[in-house]
Image (cartoon, rainbow, N blue to C red; front, side, top):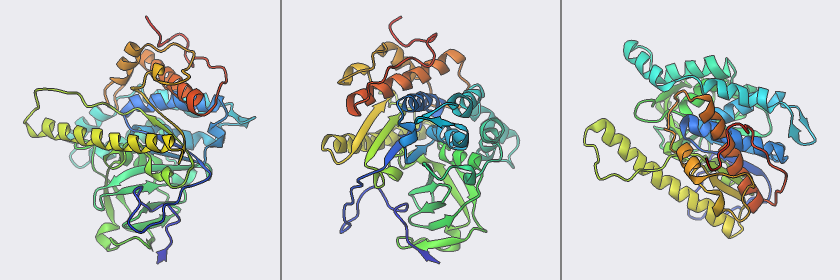
Length: 384
């Protein structure tokens, strides 16, 4: 069956001869990768967006890797938020509490260790089981809300582009789409956060799915539509930008990704050398995506804001009035990119920093001036 893509199956870069369509409405939130560090930073972002009434205005939430843990939990809990006057009253029960419980559990190391002992179980399967046990249960993509549209992304290692997972369909513009997928959210998020080479690939079994061939699909044979090997969405788009770029006029980008460390000593053994190469690629892709966002904000083709875990409030025109010491926030930005347990103090400071960074961006670029107060005042991020 051939179907129209409806905008979901397009690359973010415009192809030759394609009309550049600039959306005039829609508010999108992009949640980057970065392991548990990103997951908690994004919780602070969502917290502040809710306080100022912007969470209820979102039409699309796109996520990658660690950001998909936050997005998946938010999407699953959306029905319980109880919006009153545009502000959700049960954010703690629906999002904050569940995410913080997961952040007390080490998933990556235990999954790898168990995979070695039990070779018939993949690392990806072990990660998915942990997500199912501690965060998502047996919920599927059909448990996500109709609006906002939650788009969880992973990289299709066969086609080399993004595979998007939503309640409405899963889609790869080179392969096609499947409508109303019932894939467990735990499996989708495990694929989205399958950082290579250790956690990747995660295989999604679509052999019995009813595929539709879209206008741009060219990889339509059975081998591309069966057990699809997926990797971390950040391999292709580490800001989660692509699914909102052609659909939303206002784009908010929360970047909690890592930074490439400069070193004179580059490992030559293949595991560490491969990891180094992947980090170099990630750094370059992130820089290009960031340039795209900031350039569009400056030339007014998009509205919104970019804010990162490595930002400093002094760089914003109107910073948050809550103090944020660059020494402290740099320590938080340097929390390793892992799915490893974090103590309560680190969790709360990461949430506080996401809150303050988001508030600084909203004050500077979105005319927000609502009063601000740290989610966890006992864990300040100001000067010691």
